[in-house]
Image 1 (spheres, helix red, strand yellow):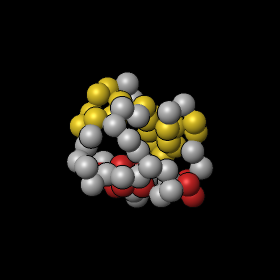
Image 2 (image 1 turned 90 degrees about the vertical axis):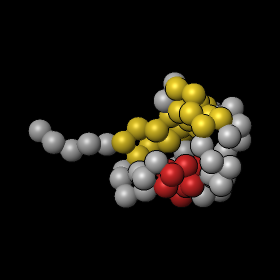
Image 3 (image 1 turned 180 degrees about the vertical axis):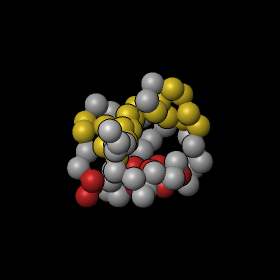
Length: 67
């Protein structure tokens, strides 16, 4: 499946069916991230219910601590 993630065309396996799957695929499931799916900012508790489809636009922002 082809997605646009953070402005880049990316191919992910067909086993990626939801935002939760996508976050796990990129090994971001242990990090604090914000996700925008087709221009809609998602609440974390909706990631498992939100299905991804070929051509979807996704923005993933992860928070980094430091000073």
